[in-house]
Length: 158
Length: 158
Image (cartoon, rainbow over all chains, first blue to last red):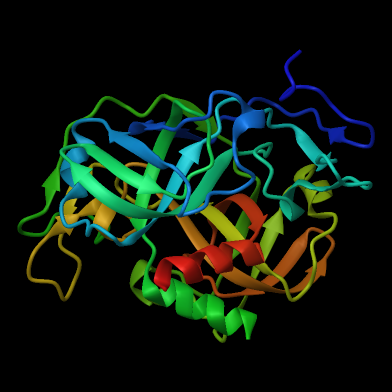
């Protein structure tokens, strides 16, 4: 059983019927330096290594209008993650916490989100900084991170 | 054909095989005041109306440890959206733009993301402000929006 699959003391898994509510389409792959979960940084850093996002045809047509140096929200599928834990005990924590109180990759729908800086576009390959996921992670979506998104966040933090 | 399904001049749809790469599980429903897409605000506002997020069993167990007044990232499934447009012409724009340069609900994987303030928890019902989606939208995930998330954003904007 891999590290991803092991349950730690205090963690709780639930029994569920198979997920069957909607289908995802993988629209690309993310290329990063990290081959194992334990190698991944705890979170992306825009001063970290450049990574590549490869967008599959025909979705590369949807890159039109992306601005270099802009900030993008990237959604991806954490395909190595189990999906049945409701309480988790991440390393370094005494007490397990609910999955929704954590940004762990283990979730009922293992969708990861990162904010990245777009540093270059070459056809259907994007160069970005700020990711923290495994090499080969399937891509789900790219959206501009609007300035309004930041402004809202500032209000929330104020 | 509904407003959601109509193609405007300059928009481009692609032909694709059905999405079949991974299954999602709907883990709740979002209750908002908005019954039609044209009623939804252009984006969520944490001073807007309170909305309710209903989390289905057994996933309510995963709410343990959520902090009222904290900021959450909410992911949801835009189940009314077409998925095949690569160029889109939102109202008020002259030129169509690529889907990935827009935060339109029309996307190859129509996953919406919002940052909300958690204003109350009552069992498996959350009260939040900051959503902009239709009433009845299926819930996919809840994650804390870490302060590091803001800090990273500030770096990106600096």
